[in-house]
Figure 1 (cartoon, helix red, strand yellow):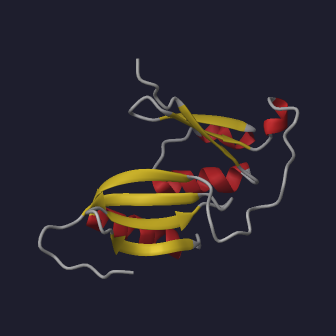
Figure 2 (tube, rainbow, N blue to C red):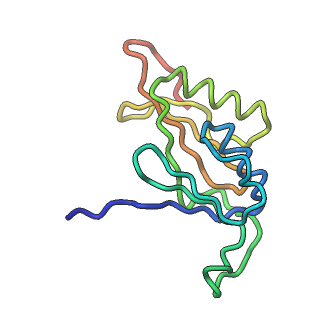
Length: 140
């Protein structure tokens, strides 16, 4: 039996800001979630993404720290948006709303089209889609 990813969890500094970001990204999050410290979002493929603003409730050794300050990232969440146009549109929408770009949309060396943006806690979100056939794209 192959091991499968069951959940992906993110520790968040401000639940309200994080929920707003992930709603704008396109996730269906129940309205009553703002008052919770742990919110699980079941994805269509069965994976659960959870956001937690107080992990010390389930991990007594957890020590809360400030937001990441490094230019590197330790994890990445990829959201497949199917098309290059969808990646551009979502990236531009989130940038206009004030979210921080990590990397503007670009063609990869292995085929897909990517853009990276940070959520309110500095977690890197990868937006991916398929390149238009036979259309040149700007390389970053």
